[in-house]
Structures are given as structure tokens and as C-alpha cells.
Amino acid sequence: MAADNAIKNHAAERRMFLLRTAVAGAGIAVLVGVLLFRVSYLQVLRHGYYETRSQDNRMRVQVMPPVRGLIYDRNGVILADNLPAYRLEIVPEQVDDLDATLDRLAKLIEIRKADRDRFRERVAKTPRFRGVPIRLNLSQREVARFEVNRGDFAGVEIRAGLTRHYPLGRVAAHLVGYVGGITVQDLGRVDEKRYRGSNHIGKSGVEYSYESRLHGDPGSRVVETNASGRALRELEMNRPTAGESLYLTIDARLQKAAFDALGDQDGAVVAIDPNTGGLLALVSKPSYDPDLFVDGISHVNYKQLITDPHKPLFNRALQGQYPPGSTVKPVMALAGLETDQIEAEKQVWCPGFITLPGSNHRYRDWKRSGHGWVDMLEAIFRSSDVYFYKLGLKLGIDNIHRYGELFGLGARTGVDLPRENSGIMPSRAWKNGTRNQPWYPGETLNTIIGQGFMTTTPLQLAQMTSLIAQRGAGYKPHVLRAWKNPVNGGVSQTEPTALRPIALNDPQHWDVVIKGMEEVIGNPRGTAYHYVGQNLDYTIAGKSGSAQVTKLAQNQAAPDIEDVEHQFRDHALFIAFAPIENPEIAVAVLVEHGGGGSSVAGPVARKVIDAFRSQPPVLQASTGSGR
Image 1 (cartoon, rainbow, N blue to C red):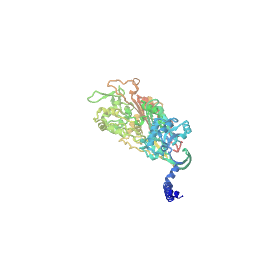
Image 2: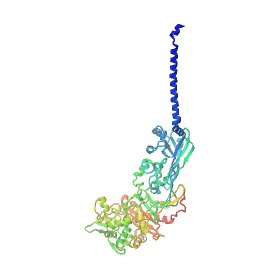
Image 3: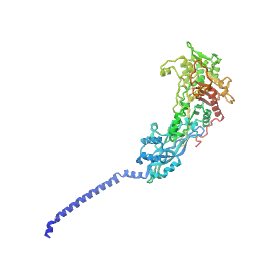
Image 4: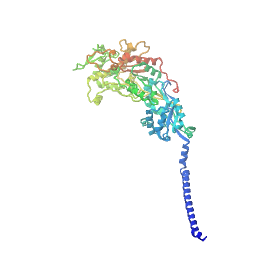
């Protein structure tokens, strides 16, 4: 027993036990302290953050895009509509591998390279917690195929929405325009906050010009979701504000008549109400289907459009710049009368050509044998080039330029449509500035008959015709007539913008020029009598024109049009207004490579005016008509 006590030290064991107990207790205390600190940190200091994260697991904030405003014609016929559609969206924050997800989605739903490129552009500009569309306008079959496999695609949603549709299709494509997918460049011209959740933006036409009115303002909603992300119920709603609906000055029936009147010919038709400046029709042909662009045009379709030699995307009415030919002779006649360079009754000999002093170059009349003795009236309705050549030498380019500018030639009209071109009303300063060359007398002769450097758009010619019809009074061309407030339903009307009146020294000079234009159609010797003037039950004034495409040699006889290749034929032009006493419509027609203005463009103008006269557009009592 004594030996055992000598070997075992109980006091030491007790001290060691107590030390170990103390260390263990201290360790436990420290760990408990750390745990309590962590619990306090999470439950107290970070309570708000984790509560929000917890709520986010079952609640989501969804942006609600606004409904785009509709577009109507002057009588409530719908020109741009919204149709139900489904779109596929991805929330980048909820997807681990976007490329892999897209690859797997492509096995269920067609996703083109253009779709991917546009998606990546939007992802780079959008907060990662917001949904970004990858495909629009899904078919019912595609929706069903995705829903069956929905559980395999975290962060991917199908949402119901609206897509744009254009009932008139090609007939009004260049006028109404179209919407397309939003690009980074598009976001640079708008308030990005207004486009959260939106997929479309105006790209051309009225859709582009009035994007700010049509788009509206987005809303939002808070929804409760289950573990797979499916919405269970709506907790909070801030409704979006729809875009304004627009009512245009356009008459859809007349737009269709003008489109059909051109037939298979390339060209443009512009019709204006001289009393307000409102466009009644604006047609460019060939045209295209605007619905192709709404949800992203395919590479094949786009290549077909841009490689088509007839250029269907080109808006000839606003952007086409063509020599106006003899359609400007009424304006040049007014310039001669107003500057006292000629009297209306004075007869001028027209042998079929003219030469300048010191030159044997012949500036020929369209009628090689000449017109004989002609006064101003005959020079207009028989379209004598020689008469106007001689008048041009007296006027000089400075007066020609000044009166051309008075009637809006060589300058944008300011119409509320995008990408209008200005044309050229040449002058000494213009030539010196653009070509660093002096002005030559022969160029004056070309200019006074609407050739040479001079170019105009069909819209400018329609405005010029309207100013003549109203004897110098006029309004800036426009397409917007009214718009409806989506909140209170109130309708606001646009006020026409009056142009600076053209005040003549002698108002009777209008009578001379308008009488000459009346005789173009009403006189058996008028250039358009046989093509436009038959079986008329209303008065009409007009002027034909042919814009030369290729120049003939000095001694070359004018060939028959059938012997000229189509691309080398003259452009055909015609301007007209009716009725003469109280004008209601002014029309300008261009037919590319049509040949004769009277024989080709004239009948188009007649069909448009006939259509207008058969059923003049009558504005509805309420602008709220239509869907």
C-alpha cells in the first residue's frame, strides 16, 4: 500500500484534471462566445440584409413594360396594332452558365445567332437581376415544349406580352415604319429607365418620329414564387402607363389607291391637303413587309432586301432626289412675270433648239421640230423647252435660285418623318462651294427646265404644287393630326404650321400660271390631255415632266422608248391639284424610268385624285374610334 502511494501522485493528478477542465471550459466558453457573437451578428446586425435575401427566395420584383400606343389613320382605321405574344426571358443572376443554358435551350426552341448577339448586347447594359429576352413571339408549340422541360432551366421564364403588327403591310411600310429589337445604340437616344422590360423601339417612319409618345412608362409588380420560380400570387402592383395613341392625317383608303395606282412600277406618290399641309398619302414602291422586322428579321430575308436592285427599303418619297424636269416650269414662269423679264402675251419662236453666243452646241427641245410661236400659256401646256431656255437667259441663275427657294425647292420641308433629304436648288455659291468652279450660262438653261444639278424629292414637289394651288399660301407638311392621352382619354389636336406666304407683286400672275396648268390637261394640244383629261367631272390643273437619265449625243435622234433599256429611260413625273377653284388635294407622282411624264405618271395622279373625289375622307366625330 505504501508502495502504491509512492507511485501514484493524487495531488498532481487532481491539478492536471483541474487544468484540463479549465482549458476545456475556456475553449467551450470561447466557442460559445463565438457562436453567440455570430448569432448576434446574423440576427441583429445583419437582420435586414438576410431578411431581404430570405424574402427574395419567395418574392420577386418584375418590371412591367408599357403597352405601346396604337396608330390610326384620320378616320380610325388602324395602321399599327398590338397582338398577344409570348417571349422567352433569362435572368442572368440566376443562371450559372449562360452559354450552356443557351445551348440547351436551342435544342428545344430555335435561337439564331442574331438572337444571341442581341441578347448579349442587352445583358451588358441591363442589371443582372432583371430578365432579358432571348426570343420573342414564341409559337404555342415552342411554349409547350419549354414548359415540359421547365424544371431544367433555372432563371428562364416565358412571359405573355404583346407584339407589333401592321395591318396594311407593304402599303404603308415607308410611312408608318416599324419597330425592332432594342440595341445598345438605341438606348443611347432614349431614357434607359423608361425601357426596362421593353423589347421594341421605333426604327423608322412614324414609329421612329413619335417613339417618345408611343412608348409609355414601365410599371412593376411584386410576386410570390415557389422553389422553381413559378409565380404563386401577386403581392404589389404599380401599373405601367400605356403609350399615347396617334391619329394621322393619312387616309388609309387613299394610301391603298396610290399604292395600287403605281402597279409594278418603282416610284413614289405624295398627296397633300393644301388647306392644312396634312399628308393624305405617302407611298414608296417597291416596299417591304414591316412585320418581318418586329421580332428580328432573319439573315436570309434581310439579305434579300438589301441586295434587291430595286431597293425596297429606300423611301423614294422622302429620300429620293430626282431632277424635277418640266414640273418646275410654272414656278419659272412666275419668276419671269414677277421680275418683268417677260410678258405673258409675248410670243417666242421655238425652232426646236437654241445655241449660246460663241458656241455651236444645241440645247434641244423635247420636241425636235419645235413648237413654233408660243406665248407663256402655250409654253406651259405644250411644255416648250426653248421658250424657257430663252427666259432663263433673261432671268439668270440668281433669280431662278431665289424663286425656287420660295417654293421650297432644295430644302427639307420639315415633315415629321425621319431621314428626309433636301435635294439641290443650285446657285453660283453652291457650285463654287461644292465644286470650286464658276457658273456657266449653259447650266442656267439646264436648271430652268429642271435638269442639270437640280434635284428634288417627291415630297418637295407636292409641297410646291400645294403652294401654287393656294396661290402662295401653305402649311408645313405633317402626318400627326391628334393624339390620345392614355390616362384621362383626352384628345389633343395638332395645329398646322403656316409657311411664309409667297406674296406676288401682281396676284394676277397666279391666274396665268394656273390657267396654263389647267390647259395641260384640258386643252387638246396639252401634253396630258389624252392621258389625264378624258371624262373629267371636276377641274384639275397639272404639269408633266421627264427627268433625263442618260444624255443624248448632239445629233442623235430621240429613240422610241421601247428601244431604250429600262434603266436608261427617263424618270416620269407629274404634279396636279384639284379642284382648281377650291383645291382639296395636291399630288406629286414619280415613276422611275417610266419614260413620259404625261403618259405614265399622269394616269397615276388621275387615279389618286379620282379615288379621293369618289369618297373624300371625312373625319370621324370622335377621334376615339377604332380599337
